[in-house]
Image 1 (cartoon, rainbow, N blue to C red):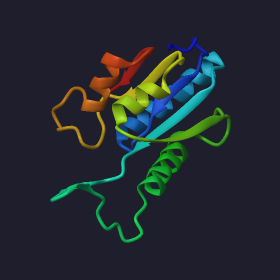
Image 2: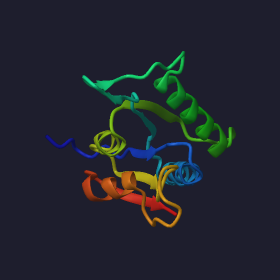
Image 3: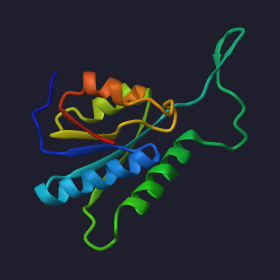
Amino acid sequence: MTRQPDGRIVVGVDGSPLSLAAVRWAARLAELTGSPLEAVTVWEFPCLLGEHGLVPPALDGFGPERHAARILDETLAAALSPAGAPVVRRHLKAGSPGPALTSAAEGAAVLVLGSRGRAAPPGAALGTVTHYCVHHAPCAVLVVR
């Protein structure tokens, strides 16, 4: 079931330099349009393929959700000036990044993404997550290069 558009601007945040640029674009767009701004960071629990299927590794205190929250907070702090920054709703979502971002964008006016994240090969025009979102998002997608 598709939600009615609610005017939100959703921005994907992974801590990469292009993600930082995407947050700045999204914040400016939110400021100009008076739209609510949501910043979304997606995290996955790392698993290894073991003899009995997928097994979570010993993480010795590392928490992927905590790490994702730190990336989100640090990126927003670096991208937004305290004076006049829009109110940003922060969301952490567990799962595969492409599907999680397109789900978060359900009903939004636009999904803003950097053209590629940390894992994309240097020459790639679009990273795999951005490519997925461009083809599957339920709303307009603004890609920041």
